[in-house]
Length: 82
Image (cartoon, rainbow, N blue to C red):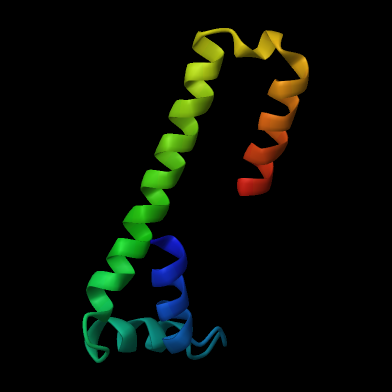
């Protein structure tokens, strides 16, 4: 979902500092269903990070940090995701 909505948004987004805001308003106002695709992308990213932090919290609660190699790989993946 994130990849598909991100690709669609990237087709209409301009990253120049003078036109970035106007390209976002163009997506929301002029592109068919652009507003819903933008909100799906934003809410999907928020849900991804909520699930990520819940997963880390579960690992802390159950003491998964005792498995040092697995925990280190998880921490590296967490920082790579951020």
